[in-house]
Amino acid sequence: MVKNDAKYFILIGSIVIGTLVSSNIDTSNKRNLKILNASQYREAIDERYSLKNDIESLSDKYSKAKLKLDKYNDEDTSKSEILNDIQKELNLNNKIMGTTEVTGPGIEIRLKDAMEEYLETNDIYNLIHDQDMIQVINDIKNSGAEAIEINGIRIIDRTKIYCNGVFLRINDVLVAAPFNISVIGNKDSMRKYLLSADNYLAYLQVRGIYVSIDDKDSIKIPAYKGNIDSSYLADPTAKK
Amino acid sequence: MYIIFGLLLGVVLGLVLKINIPDQFTSYVSIAILACIDSVFGAIRGNLYKNFQADIFISGFFGNAILAAALAYLGDKLGVPIYLAAVLVFGGRIFDNFANIRRKLLENYKSSKDKNSDTV
Image (cartoon, rainbow over all chains, first blue to last red; front, side, top):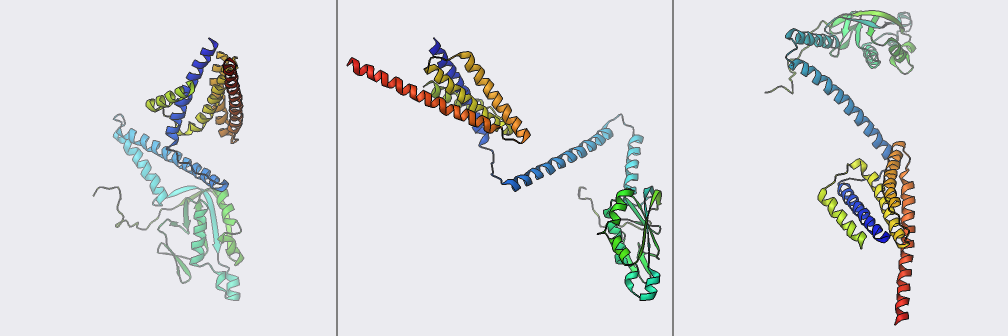
């Protein structure tokens, strides 16, 4: 009796094993295995992490957009509410674009030519040139600035800076030294970044140019006053 | 005989039923299969030595499989290849049991032959 028992159990056990093996082999056939060395493995892990992050942020974006769309499609939402929302979004976009006045905490940078040294040595490196201003603005943008202004002229993505004799021509407006650059953003991180030794302000200081940075709790930055041309810009998603 | 029949039946069942194990679990199932094979070999051995016990077999069959899969999963999460422990232990025991089964079968075969030659 004991002997028979064992045979049945062995039979059942081998049926289970066979089932597991066959179902496992079935799926493992499709798997694309590859042997990786340590550094390749680490790269793959890094890539997986960044892809996961991408997926997360995309799904976050998606859910936000879907929420908005649902709200608009919802019949309970009144038209004025929708208009209000759209107006809010438009205002935010205008703020980012630079076409409206903005206020906020930030820093004020003063740049002044080293005039005395220049009169003594006639060294043009004692003066601030358009190239210097472009580099400084680039550094400021990189430091996390959200809005920038030079002597009352708003800097946006279309801003151009040229040399015009003793002036700088910024957005087609002539600006003379000294330059007051107001920047809205995180005060501490911007100041730290701008004053670090490998950034352009440090190089200007080496050239004798007067550089100072002041923290401001509230800065008012005016709107961009020029035209923003968009006659050649077409919406790729628009139907033809 | 029973084993081969059972395995074939199982394979056919698996193919017919098309049980789909998700990709990320295949490695755990492999470890579980190893544990099951070990239990079956243990049962065959117990059968031959006449000390087979159904309850021990059943508890070992499922318990070992689940424990092995769980260990493999834990190892995956911790980044330590714990599944190697299961592979080594079950692999070693399978060979051990097989050696015992082989010896016993050969002994049985020899003794039956001796008996036959005695009677002739």
